[in-house]
Image (cartoon, rainbow over all chains, first blue to last red; front, side, top):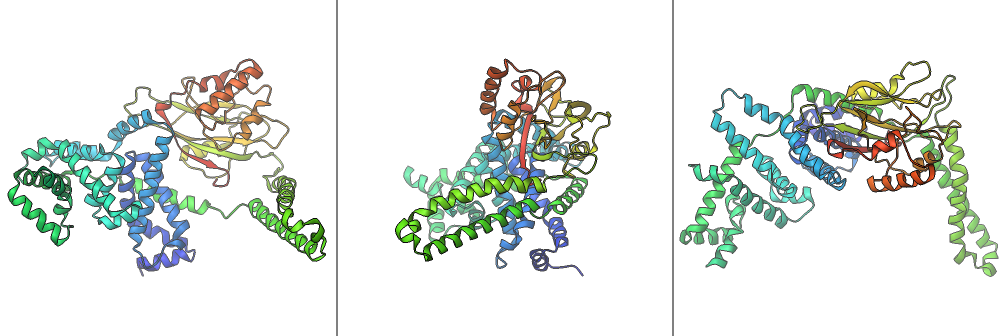
Length: 194
Length: 331
């Protein structure tokens, strides 16, 4: 019989390692997506994934059962990814980051998706590329709130809790990120009929 | 009017999300009826939102990647052994030492000696010193007791620290294309110990590498790798050098180790022939600056340096990253 998420968490708390696999199965894509969007590098995202699930495994006893597991996991994954990027920056790898972002360009699968999508109209493919690029070009702080709010659908309060900041800060970052995106995508915004 | 627009403009993002209070919402709606500029702003923001919603492409990995990831994660969890025996013993001894000192303090106190010696007020620093000295004496003994032992054929080195090294993939736009080779230790018979190679080829640690003490030569392999580990070991034998691994690219060193100690580095400085031809020693650096400072000291002491160390200064950091540094406990 398939175990519920609550049961899996309870089992994991009691040291049942087999309970981790179904949780990983359920959330791996979400964690990868987040890690990739924040670190902008597949290999780094892979490391963040590993550390996130290892942390879940080791810290599951600290998880409050009345809270949402998904939000707790978001918190771990996002902070792990942010710390990863900060550590990378502290190592004065600014040149590396530039190269890394370029490597991201070359290695990320979405580029292949865009390029090889036989059903996509060329203009749409280009639009996808530019929209995705615009988001990726945002600063780390702005990008993080945009990802969490626009694509992961989290509320301001949830994001504030994950990033350990006030709701006002989240709103402010989101506001400036949107303005920046609007500027970056101006030709498409102007041409849009929506 | 402009200041009103500025005030409203800050609320527009929330207005679109529908997260304003009822009063703020009606304030914004009222303003929009009379202000074309803000109205255009709302339209632009809505269009931007629409573009993000419909055209942003989220990154996704292949099913094969997720399958590999799950396997690696499982293996790592299985390997995360409980605290090492010597760490447990150390903790027990610390507790025991503290307990004994506390008891001693009580006995002195009860015997009224404290009355004229004022031990109660002044003894605490001595306890700390006593405890530290005890630890200094006991800890090395314990560590020697539980360090990897001679299994009959090998005297094992103690895995001291490891740094994960990563190169960009071959399709990276970086101008220098890495064809790196990982240095491994080669024993006298010419057969290469499989421990490190296996770790490298599989991209993860599978076991604590056993270093064969019958040789202290690290040689570069021809096997190209895109990711590997730097290992350093502290030998338990009479050699005071620090055998290590390095990465080499067309004879230009790419390795830059950021390892958590300087102790081993200073140990290396006492070695006399670690930098002879075809022999390489890893510099343990706290950071590039510290490393260069140390190199200058080494230069003054030994009149120059060769091979590995010299090349280390030319590390093109832009094509190398060290995403993780592990310490021996984690391993």
